[in-house]
Image 1 (cartoon, rainbow, N blue to C red):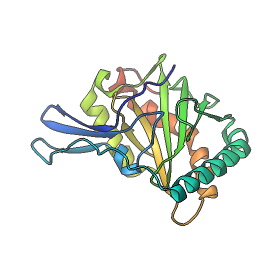
Image 2 (cartoon, helix red, strand yellow):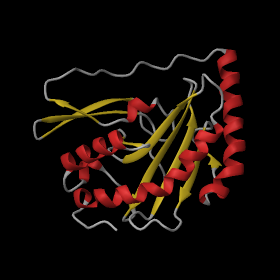
Image 3 (spheres, helix red, strand yellow):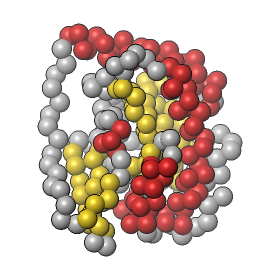
Length: 217
C-alpha cells in the first residue's frame, strides 16, 4: 500500500467530551520530534492549537550534517536490518531522508505486517515510525469500533512502554521513537529499537477489541 502525502499541522477532534489532539507530519516527509506524535487527552475547552510554521531552510553546514547522518543511518540499516529483524530497508523515492522496510516475520499473530519508516529530520533527530497493517489496511483511529477507548489505550501504552503509540493526520496509528543527535550517532540504541519492533504485535492484539471487536492473540 502506497503511503499518502499529507501536509504538516495539528488536528483536534472531540470524542465523548474528551478532546483527542493529534500533532502530525507526512509519513514519507519529515518525521517530527517524538512528542509531536504522542496521543494527548485533555479536557474539552483546553489549550488551542494552530498550524505549524513552514520549515526554515537549512544552512549549508546543517544540510551537510543531515546528509552525513543519513549515510550513517543507511550503513547501520544495511548491516543490522536483516541481522536483527529480517528486514531489508530501502531509501524512499518520495523522501530521500527516509528509509522504509516491512516486518512480517514470525512471531507476529495479530497484524499482517508492520511498515517501518526511519528518517533523519532537519532538526537533528532520527525518528522511527512503525505502522501496523491489519486486515489489508492501516489501523485508523477514526474508523475503529471504539475510537475513544483505542485513544486511551494508546496513551496508556505510551506511558508504560519503551516505544510510544500515536496517530497521524489521516488517523492511521503507529508506534514510534525519536533520537536526538546532539551527543552523536546512537547506533546501539537504534539496534535496541529495531529489536523491539516484533514486540509491538502483542500490544496490537490488546487493541483489537477496540479496533474491530475481535480478540487478540
